[in-house]
Length: 372
Image 1 (cartoon, one colour):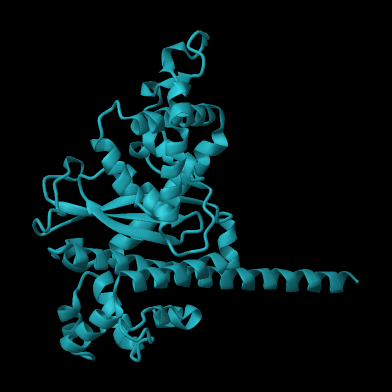
Image 2 (image 1 turned 90 degrees about the horizontal axis):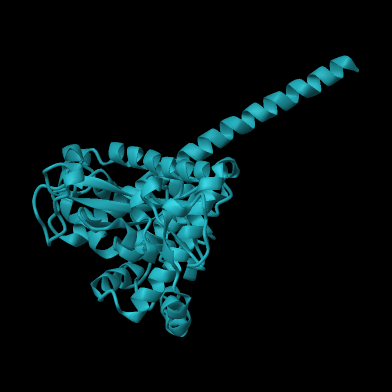
């Protein structure tokens, strides 16, 4: 962590709550951050290190560690990862993926620790994280274990502090909803979820009178372009509000789900989403490169989750924090340390690769000299 701070200066983003000045004690700050990342907590971290007292770490955390400083520091590390020449091997920086990682909880806290049959009979929460195609995590948030991940996809794409230019985003099959397709299209992203249950998906056509012999079993109906035209201006205002940050996409998605199905805006987004989902499904069927990109992007998220599980080791990764604020700090700290580890790995691999290239070049020059 100290080396990564020397490379990037991310500790300076943890400005004082009142003055905005960077922390005077960088080691103390790193200790407080590791207390969040490893799930130790400040009290156990103070007893383990025996360098800083609990009150000192608590003072540092209260005055320097908060949501906006965590996000600014994460953006600094993300930019540093993308600046490494070696990371170009993994992607051009224009794609990303997102996935939720479940952590068990010691009990219910502020309605955040809930049950999800997929993960067993114990309550827990999910850390929903966005990662770029260069293995750089750039956004994370805490959501309930039984919450729909699809509602939070656009939060990470729009509300991060990096200079990333994301054009294509991957998720698992659960995110392939009509409203997500529609909102992603309206906000300028290509949504590319992995489709597993392809036989159960329905396509929507423009002309209900047309026949498609090979696709008839998959045709679910026709798109209502009249509804789209009638509510187009209102839909554009909605998209502009999301882009400007006036309303969080996850909040909007929950509100749309609560509206009656005959609501004009809900129907418009559904029709736009059906159109985009149909076009994407046809691309998915005919384009093997798209399927490979999506699977590769999701595999990067799984690799990041495995690293996060190893870092979040205390209490076997079980969260005992009852308040949403403390759970959120655990997620932020974990994501920050994971990013620092990825940056260190990129630098080491890039250095080794550079040394190998230099050795090959020296051998080539030596062989040319001998031939001459």
